[in-house]
Length: 257
Image (cartoon, rainbow, N blue to C red; front, side, top):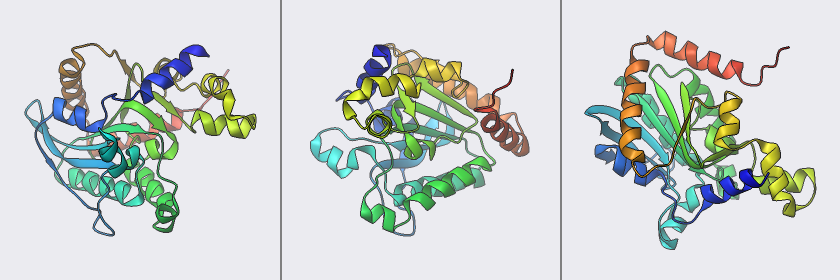
């Protein structure tokens, strides 16, 4: 129980690197692309093209922001519908030009404000889930901090999902879980344990494929591991990639004696 709550605190720790940090340290020649071609641009999602070990890839990342002004501008990493539509637009471009997709996830959840709901937040997330399942190019999702609910899942329908050792991933925030199950927000520690949200929990359940240790050489090692993973996935045909991704999610939650 205490371990899960400690991991949550580490995932939320002020100053913990978010999406932009990993883009800067994993890629070269990154070019950010903006807008969803429907409403506007959402700074909570950074999307664009860069070079990973000399190979072009598309990157889509949540970004929580640095100082307080940047955090406010990026809505603390909670994306609006236009953010998820921007992400999907870049993924479809990646499919067209045969580029693999790296998604970097770090969000407490999708923004639930009135404007976001008016512009179709639920539909934007649902479209991402549907389209990513059938995307004919490799997708790898990396959880670097907090992964909350549908806001995280909208960038996590991937062939492989990796997590940093102190990242978390859950169907609902622990505070929301505690208020629903116990009608008491102070039960956050109990909720953390029940949600099985730590990287080790999710690895044992088959929800993620790898847990990445957070060492001083994290980015150098991670860059090589990502390059090797995409090279491995690129050996599969588009149909095999889609089927592998589909079967991966069909296996989740299956219980047999």
